[in-house]
Figure (cartoon, rainbow, N blue to C red):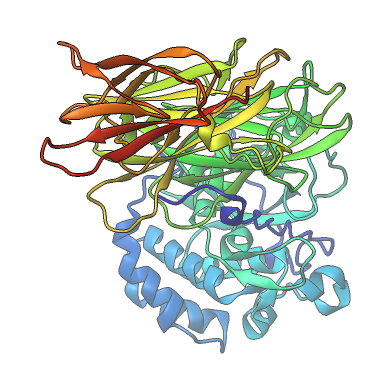
Length: 571
């Protein structure tokens, strides 16, 4: 499992919206055909992202043939004839055309900015290998004509390159795509967006095939494509332009990550008392991250059994740009941007100051369970404590070793916060006891590895936030733990690593399997073991600078092992 970090985040490749200011090709044979489609409605039952049942595995050989083995560019007719050698059905013919166009025609970035440089004539597009959206759609339609497939060009508005949440759409549209008739019904596809993308602030097109835009289900296609003629929505009831403008744009990665819904579903949202909450539902385990104004901050992501919850706490009152990223749990690739919000913050939540070094997710989840920690005693991502003490208890499914990290924003480097955490094991249970030194918002991170696993690297398991607003809290460190102290040992008292001077103190500790336990200072006191396995006794701190707990593992051993050390306050 890869540890979540800023380095893992690849900002989403913004799709080219491929504005078509040139309109459609003037040639009459390429004008848009008006077809009655009112009878075709596609209710989405979430079982498929496509409007036609397609087994992509059956296209494997055809896809390789169309993308790698056909290079003819002498004419559109000759190209289609060669492509159809491996295709029998209309669906296979359409697939071969789709794969060829999306793998051989690159977006004409220079033509996008300069209308005099672009061409939309299918033959010219074929020869140059470049086009804007009208060129893609025109070539696609022409290829379908030679293949005997009924295909039309559709014009409309799109949410792609240069789009910002909240934008209004006017005029004759900025994009073109296709609709095809298969098996008695119309279906939608966009070869421009299927071919690749141009990153924002870039002039370089990158081929990056996107299966999502092949026969996309109309209920999903309407998310970023709004046809000027509403019958080409293929929806009933139909979506208004105002609804399209207000709706949150779910990018293709949203569905490829097996996400199914998100709330709020509006692109413009507002904070309430300095906080905004976004909930995502997923059909399979997924990992998430986010950026606020391009930075991975001000948010708490909690993984749920069927998705995630993101709580955002902006640091300033203004409009913010919020991007959410996701990837399937078992995927090795980087995160895809799945949606973008415009977030209006009217007030700042002053109490919620999140650590800048915090990584998500926070709180226990299915990810924690997969790492071997079950039945958490603390299920909330934020633990509030008034007295500065708390504990986290888990049932262990695996034999793990741990590294724990406690951090506080702007803490003095001389403060050793690791001494404020103590590990205790009891059978298959582990407990992490924490006593914070002062009020604040702390980040507690658990790293673990299976003891039998090779190497020394411990991997991220879980984060918690610990909040304490009580200014009177002032806990000292736990005792210093030596290497011979085992996590199966239990310390009952004293838990404070700094002991008062001139006092007689009681000691109680469970250290099984040893011959003797002693507490040493100026004088060494031997503890006695009780029937329940605890070693108990008392020791004076008079005249001491420190106290040390020692064990003799076997009666025949000649030396003691140091397990704990306490400091004694100055007189």
